[in-house]
Length: 243
View 1 (cartoon, rainbow, N blue to C red):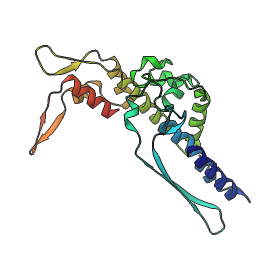
View 2: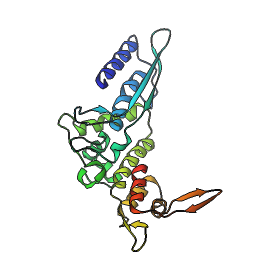
View 3: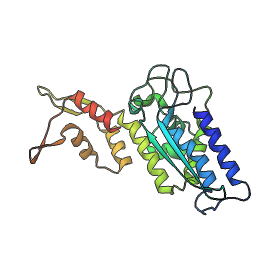
View 4: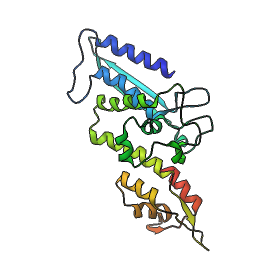
């Protein structure tokens, strides 16, 4: 389904482009290019290796392509549905997390590793190393170049692109945050703050506020807000939901 959809989109884009290129914004590609290049970006963040498919779509998408009176492409939009969110924090042994994590760790762009405060070893990050970390049919280095180029064609600014990468890096650090139970209390507290500090930095947050929000969230009771204590298990559930 995934491959056939790509072929159909490429066909529509190619026949609609016959007779002259579409209007091109200097900061991004033509409409035809954008329709085609949306796919690498969507696959990076929405596709993963499963037991039977190395590039399985873990979400649904509905694509509308609009044509003008002359048969030229006039616009397009994509609606996405039901992303498999649980895969972000858990994978089966023979499966893998979403491709984007391994693309970044491929070291094809070393500056990304520095910016995200990460190593190139996937086993350093628990959220992405529970199953497979490499796929023989996928070259993560080449795929990162395709994903990065797709952002440019789609008109992402440099800041927007870096924001996407930073949020992706923050998810990896979320999985390394550790908590322990306070003595004689049903209350969690951080077991070191290194991962929290890195996560907060990438998300533009204060590390202490992030930890406080996880360990002592504010909940509404009637018309007032009160601070609620959290057990270690509750904090980890909240952390997974946040990621």
